[in-house]
Image 1 (cartoon, rainbow over the protein chains, first blue to last red):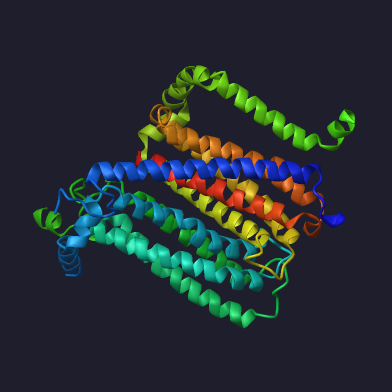
Image 2 (image 1 turned 90 degrees about the vertical axis):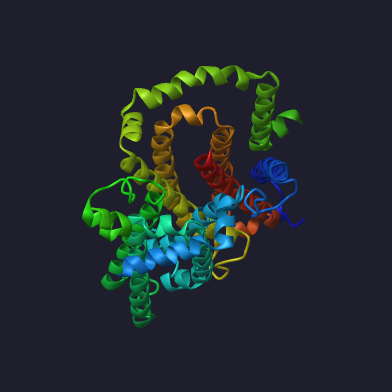
Length: 56
Length: 190
Length: 195
């Protein structure tokens, strides 16, 4: 890597925090997606986004 | 007469299958509302940055016409999503929304906002090249920016009031409010 | 050699120390132990302060402050998108990214302060309800993490040298993380409204 884009202290700290924070947030959203799908399956018996079998 | 027509239109929409599906679905209405509100960040966000730049509050070293140019597309995409989700929200609960005083004021403000944007765009084209790199816009453009900020703050505030039932048709006896909100049946009963 | 590493990598070591402390606190269940003692503070906020009183008594004022919260959030979103999409090289490519990130930072601070102050008012009005909502605590965590990230990591790095001298993947990584963090704050906020 060329000298002027070397990874110094601040850069290393920044990328570490970014990776940890990004990883945590992705984990959170995937978990939300899974629990949402679970709830929809519970409500409808299958994953339906807009239909309500109780109404029709 | 207009109020009667709007109420009939609302009742017709309410009878539609898709309207009922949107409300009855487990998450559908919530997701629609969430998308409408969160897209504020794109639509209003872009718009406010353009307006703030006109007033010289932000990015003073970047040409205002560049900012307006680059943010135009995201802003339009944001507004398109706002309109589609907004229409679907009305479609899901048509009578309730059409007879909401706050919704009606919001629509009037939206029309004013678009007229202001039209005039503002015309003035920007006319002023283009004469001040683009200055940190503060000429007075008529500044006026348009302030008006835009005020109107859009009003739009968002009225939108926030819609779910509240303070002046709903069955909660008030004030004939002016009942007329303004199009509460046809309640006005007849007074 | 150890002293050299300590002096050359202060920021990185601080990050891992903070991470260690957080993990340690979780393992020792300090958060779970502190949680019950926060309830009196939340109840006090709702029942004994002017904020809570106004919020619970005057629905119109509460709704108006909520609208201000939304507007601040909208502004924040616009600023975050402008800055971070520039850092990703998607928008404003003809303008130096230093100019964009410096030119928006002050407005970002103002919008964040307004959002936090209006947020405190909104929370005070329903403090006893939000205390029990996991999504509220997710929002607070995301907000703290986001603010710490911007003020302690991202902005200091972006201000320390010309962006052309910073590894582009680090800049992109920070930009994407920033967008995701602020989106999480906004989305969990909306979720609170549904609960």
